[in-house]
Length: 310
Image 1 (spheres, rainbow, N blue to C red):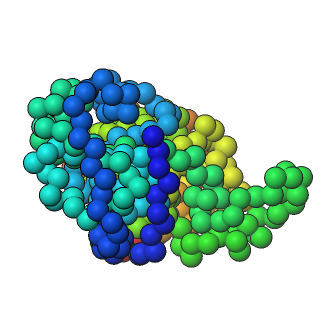
Image 2: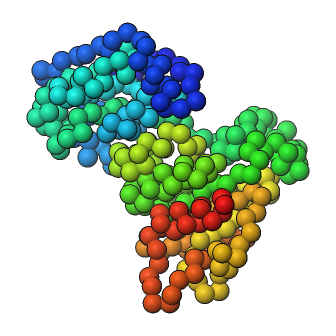
Image 3: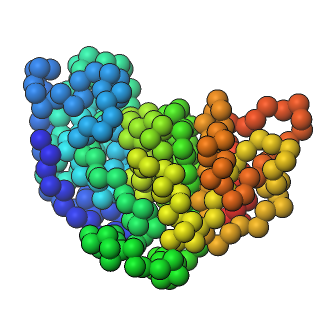
């Protein structure tokens, strides 16, 4: 089902879409049979949303589909309702199949009302390595050679002058993770490092809340987050900072940002557990009156990232 997507040479989604608009008209495939196997990726997408680590992911909404098309991710197909076809003329490369059907039929296929009129199926990519997260080449396959690279040498190889990683050990709420991705993109974080207790960053809901910004942010889904944090500290000279709610923590307004920083954010229910606070060089809090509950984690992420990038 997947088709190879023509590479685009553009620095922004808008420029990429302008390039796409110059290609031949998109191939429209009218759908009359909902049992067509090519439509299986769109079938009952709410149920499929729980299937992590599959081959595909689903995107819905105009802006998110535009950002998918303008990204380096491969688009396998697009589903458009008949009343929205004209809006996509000239915006979709000819090698991507475009399935067309009435809104009622599309809603029956996906399991809910498709009021936005467009969905797309993208292909997942292998999660980034720790080096790729920092914009570096992967280490030599010969691990004996890799271990001879000193910490000082690794620091010199850091591609980003002042890297800032957002680390979520256990963010299990899709809305929160999607908002964190959008906020991290807004403040130009270097990348996002996720623990295995996080929800799927390529679930439909996370992508939707992120407004497609996920396609421009380097993400590593780590199987061994503690090990990755240790490598960041010892090999790449990072300091780790935990966002906590504690009277004993340092106030955010008094913090001086380290040159290389990994910011750890807990989940909505528990915050950062002791396991992850023990991994932090600094515990930092947003000062608030004692009778105020903790902030939503995405709101806290925005405050931290604004303060740390200004």
